[in-house]
Image 1 (tube, rainbow, N blue to C red):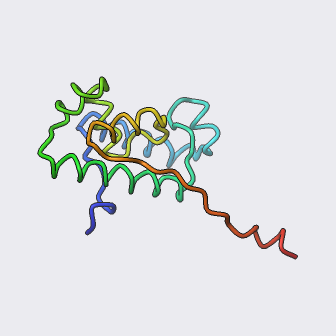
Image 2 (spheres, rainbow, N blue to C red):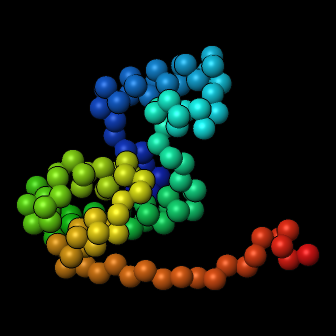
Length: 127
């Protein structure tokens, strides 16, 4: 299994909370909008966007580990909390700010480059 396929480790409290939501969802069958409204689900992020972000954060973690830096080292140098860095690295922050990503990369002596690729229009617009 590659590192991108692994799930973030959950604490016993997080596991219990996830299981409680799953159990209730099996009975109630709420939709995503209802779960977001109740505060049980953060905003939805399209899978492609999530995977792009995940690849970026995995790469940042690999650079950090190769440099022998701990989460505490990054926290002290970036001004970010250790918890925020951990959430970012483990895929729990689904919508980090550019400032957060650039601050983390700068501490590592790395650079993040943004680019735009033009995509073909959806099939319905091609006809």
